[in-house]
Image 1 (cartoon, rainbow, N blue to C red):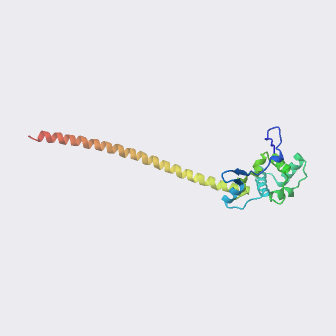
Image 2 (cartoon, rainbow, N blue to C red; image 1 turned 180 degrees about the vertical axis):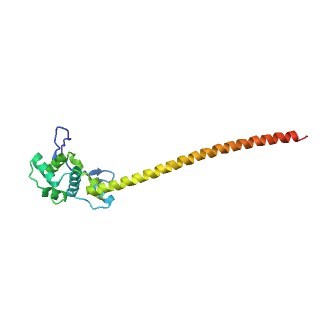
Image 3 (cartoon, helix red, strand yellow; image 1 turned 60 degrees about the vertical axis):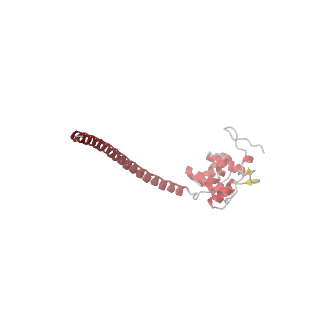
Length: 195
């Protein structure tokens, strides 16, 4: 198969869209990175329809579009006759996509077709935009709390370092005084010693 790389003046060729299967010569066979990622995450292998449906929903929600707005975009831009229910079925993996529809959906969202086939996004626990936003808020709160704890620890470290410098300086002064006193005692002992 001869694929043309997408550029600003060419449309992606539908025949060039596929899920990567790599040849692993060391093991004498082929491996599927998506299946390996799913197994590592402890989830079942998703279908291509599930993968695309979830990512279409995330892209739609991220842009604040309704399912009807996506259908309208596909109709006016690419000449389809989609309704809101078509988009809903695609998102629910209840309707398979044709390759040209996949390419046109990617163009509508302004993303490369390969982004709609990105396996790592499917393996995330949540595919609901609002729950991801809630996760972000919780993580930002924790980040703020940890930042404050770090600042307090650095302040305490600064105070401890300053006190350590004071004690070290005082210790050096006292040692110096002791050496002077020992010198005087030695000198006084020699003067008072008749021998």
